[in-house]
Image (cartoon, rainbow, N blue to C red; front, top):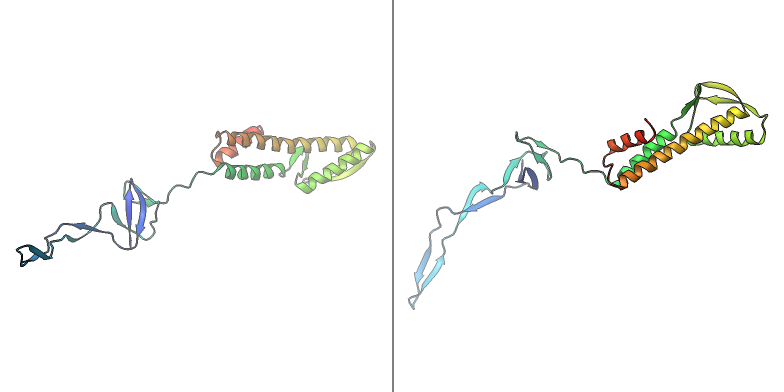
Amino acid sequence: MKYALVIDGIARTISKVPVWSVAPQEAVEEIAEMGADGATIILQPARAAVAGVIADGWIEVEDDVFAGYVRQDDGAWSAPPAPAPTPDELKTHLASIRFDAETGGLTVDTMEIATDRDSQGKVLAARVKAGADADFTTTWKALNGWFALNAAAIVAMSDAVLAHVAACFAAEETVALAINAGEVTTRAAVDAAFAAARGG
């Protein structure tokens, strides 16, 4: 068991020992004697004694209550709400969801194309080869099987991947500007704004 100083329903300070109130009780007897010159010499002044009650604002609480906890109307305690994320924390979250979207793949016609960083490099290499040789063909391993591609199909695939990646970064920039402007202040709002910026 411990004790909390509660102000405005919030445990501001925690003590493991009771904080006693000092209040006037029956005064301790005053002991005095008369000096040789007729003046009173006080040997034991009257004084206040410890009343034996917890000081105002302090209450007994369970061991799982800590400073910052909030007392509900029914007397139950709850942990303080998590602090709002900082703009930098929101941007870190934004970068994470952009990365997931960027590398999560896309579908072109019936071909499911991987867009992780390694796959982006392979698409670019195929695009370079197709650009240099209009007769170039290859069999491309997509996420849903093998596809025979000619140079034009490789260029189309590359264009789609490039547009996908660019859209992800453009959406990230849009949401980052909204964070800077104070328009997006929660992680859930970042998720929603990113989806909206990507068009759904």
